[in-house]
Amino acid sequence: MLSRRVFFAVAIILTSCAVPKDQDRFAVSSLGSDSAEFISSRELLVSGLVSEGISTAARGRLFDAESRLRRAVALDPSNPTIRYNLAIVLGQQGHFDEAYKELTELKASQGDHPRYALALADLYTGKGDLTQARVELKRAFEVFYQAQNWSQAASIARSISNLAFASGSEQEALCYSYEAFFLDPSAVQFGYHTSLLVAANQYKTVDTIIGEQLAASSALGAMPRVHLSRALARGALGNTKGALEEIELAQNLVAQDPEVGSEVNSVWWLLRQEVPLTEEEQADEKLIDSIEAAKPEVLRLKDKPTYAMLRWPRYFTQLMERVRGEE
Image 1: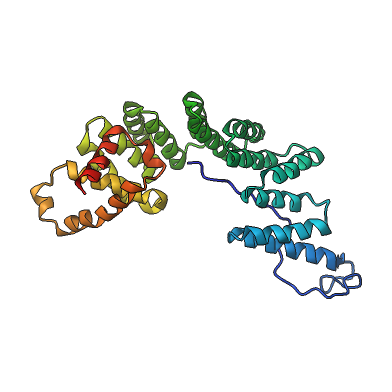
Image 2: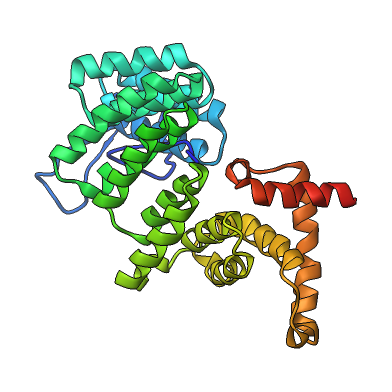
């Protein structure tokens, strides 16, 4: 679930501006201020290039972004912010060696700022070196933890957890997952934590901990991922009716986290095939239509399962296999 982290930082962002050819004599200052410092045309050009580089990168035009940022670096080679952004764009394009060189040189000249560790972690993840990526993330985590920036520390702990699980280090993954929830006891982190527990086959723990935490604070149930986790756990434990109750709670909250919408609806449809309709439900045309409307999404996912579905309990993967067999 590790999604990739992209960090763009720039001190000045300007809209596009025309710069005269005679750049040595051109300069501007703020109106009405005799003592204002002049901004050279070169500085304006650099700022414009950086602004364009960042905006084009945000739109996925990485080659164009790289071109603009290289021009900015040529004009202002000692500016660490520009070189940092160039390294990020290079890394996103897979130019790992050059990006690594930029970042290590920045660390040597600017100090061990956590943003360099985070950027290096991204590079190592892109190269498939999850062990070294975790080393860099732990360096950044320690900085934010010592600074008592709990939100940022929790976010990094979650990333460490995800990479550790992907590497097969389940205990490390669980350790940092607990840490993330402890530092940021929010519904978002609770959802991620319970999802990991499902992936670790700790179904009874999931059902119990969600019940206990929601009894203490109903706000922790504000995200669909929490109820999705409990539905998966209950289904694995044989409690299909309880699983259906939870997944319907998740459906009502999907707007809070649309990313899980397809998974939630697929689990709901699968459970609807297992739990008999009551007489009242059989007469509910809206419900019947909803069940039919959800089927195409299930058929699509059965051939192209998401990464999250690969963590499903065996019970649900068997239900999906049954769908494949019925085609």
